[in-house]
Length: 436
Image (cartoon, rainbow, N blue to C red):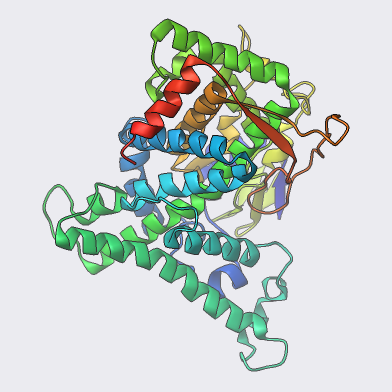
């Protein structure tokens, strides 16, 4: 196992030598025993993975992903409306928003409730995947020979758990896929990633193998995007609470736009918000949602800086270390969006935050757009500040993060105050007139 703490080494190996470093270690518990060999997160670098990425690129490239901007903007309006109505449930609203965007994009399925059936089963799937992939959790990952122990044998409960978990994850992808097929059959399908692929523009009939690849590709969208997006937006709220001067400056920027243009910002206006854009970069740097990303492994031996790296060596990109390298980002533990402004901005953290090489997150642009519009509408409509105790003193939150494939800022107390501005009123009016 090799851990890369330097962004330069990560680019040299995972990007520049991607033909060698794009394979994926196949865990025994979360991969083999759960029968996840077709999952985009587990599959080797082969023709199936290339098909997955081709399908995603068709819909989620920088240009193609613009077709989903209206969905992301409408859901951002719903988000701030719900936060203002019940601010104590902010995290729950963030999760509903992420689920609603992904389900509408992937399947054309409208999410109207936080306890929607598909949202509940998808959340269950994220928990299962997190438990199954936790490093050091399962002895069978260290001693793969244990996979041959009979399921009835004492201590082999992990095998029945893996079998049930694997079936649950597959069914969680199959159910919304079949829902789209039924909508197509009755002529009510809303345009989506899945419906477009099941009804190709050239009119050919999708065969079973092609449909299987569509099913696995669509099923990956929720697991790839929902939890990470929630992590980033939670960190945004946390940093705005901890840095009120930064929050006020960002609010000033969005207010000036509204007063100048006399309308709400849209995703077409991103270039008009340099400070908000810098905040997004700084959130991604200061609190990377996936501190280690997903592991790579070598497909063949390689020689690098005098070291022989054997085939099947696990490669971990320590994204957290890269984002907090004081040689790249001076004073790395300070939250400072201005590091990305001016004539000599520091390196863009998005070059690391979404992975490397041929395993880079294919939904990067979709995620960025959704996060950005949530930030802008939140800045227009509300102010987040520290909670206060019975004596009126600020409650200082702990700056700490959860561990796991996706990391979240730990729960913190806060208070949210509605802003009384013309823009805030227009956001609320737009939400009330929305058809969603």
